[in-house]
Image (tube, rainbow, N blue to C red; front, side):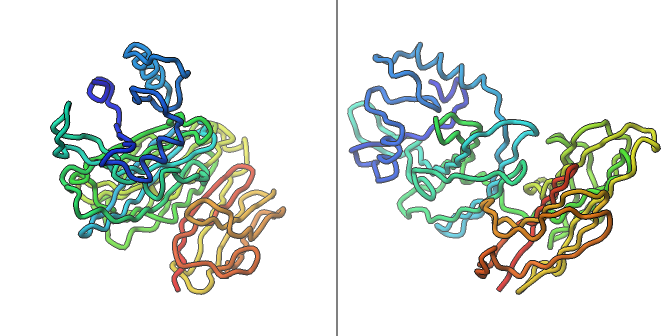
Length: 373
């Protein structure tokens, strides 16, 4: 009833029966469920017994009315029983997401079952990846990207597999956002644009980016999480004029016919003035690197539009600080620094995707780089 009426993504965690496994039983223990019926909305309601439909419905309506502070997008690929998911979380500008933790659940429905009340079992929790505890994440600015790989059991019917991803407050289990997709409808992972750079000229912004290895049919440009423009696939630049004063975030996606990639890195610009060019000196601040991909080191080029504190930091794909390359006052001008593929303690890092972030008083720019060995 609730799944149909309220569009809830359902995962049934079984205990002490033929569908139970260490993950589902562990999830029940994490939530502290000990009473029946064991239907709980996200988060833990007051431990009032007995639970009635009215109590559960009121709690569900209350939680459904909460404004989601983020969106979740995931694509993936399936080769035999090997499943790969590419997950992107995009937080709304200014939204709060304390203690973010991500959960990935593989459920199966329409399982034949012989029992006193049912002839099929639905939404059965088959696996929680990587574990039932979920994964604590650190938002890189307003975004977080991660890749998860796992293997499906041969006995599961792939046509009846439903994938569920949610982000919750790890302290109280309140869910920020949830999304689900049937495995047969999973969009294939496609490469997004990279190295998005924003250049300001008073209150005009020009975006440039690198094309994916496979040229897309087009691009979509987003400002403050809202679509603003289509760009042809052979063009990697877009200019927007007469922006209002304030902070504006941008990202770009690639279109492959009807399939849209995940977002590029996000850039934030701060418009300090209106349309009068005498109000303020134009700010032009950029970051780029070459080569990319690289091994064993890459040169990072900075263009600083105004004097002030500048921080250049390398993060891994989980949002952990790997190395801070610059943290000092710089004058207006061009600068270079080198990342040697090592952390702050001098330990070589593994091959993979990393992010370089340039932070000034008015900008916070992140760009994806790849270390290959």
